[in-house]
Image 1 (cartoon, rainbow, N blue to C red):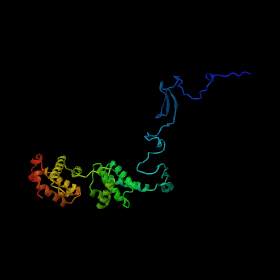
Image 2: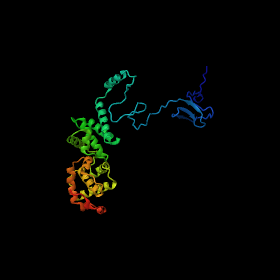
Image 3: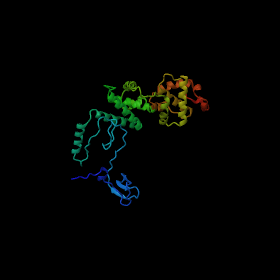
Image 4: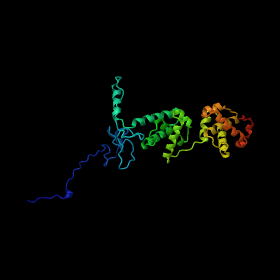
Length: 323
């Protein structure tokens, strides 16, 4: 009995793919768009809604990871670079109507799942944020200080040093890096850490962070803040800055600290413009003693003819108070 063979081209192939076609347009292939914002399937040609409540299967946010990295789609909240560990955990709420059971469960769960060293980091970050807010530093300074503190902890740069000293040094360096320096005395008052201890930590970190640019504090950096706290007009601030630059060129106040130079120049500039501020007022704002301001002012008064430029000649130099 002869058998009939069917050519491959004549074999019937069943298309098992399910294809959604707009019943109005009936265009093949269909032009259908997914609007995830509203959860609808919409025909892009006529606007007919073909389906609703579709599930968005895309990533929660964009990923720039390589093939080796994991895709961070649908894995919870964003990772915090300041903390260690996978950071994928469940948190038990403390609210249960006032019975207190949920609070106890939350504490117990926190002790069991706590990552080693993470508690110290969280407490240090909390202290840094509180201290920066206390003296009006922006969030950028606090974030940089937190990054420096984490690097110190990861690289074990200051073994045996208390966290308070490390935090003070990190805030001090962060202020220097962003061009808003604070004096050692201000950081001491803020953190209650001795000046020598901050100096030791700062020196050690400055040598360790050799690739990090830490600017040297100058009198000009402090001038705007001090004059603002003293409610002095802009012309006095400009005059004080000019006096500082001229004194550096002539070497009038060589060897004096930037804070002492700024205080003495502010005292001289305020008297030139008859905005006289006492040495006590300037001492309270700048954080230096009245004796230090008067001693620095003596050198400025001796060189007053060379320090004051032609623009200020008409301001009656003779009215400057004698030291």
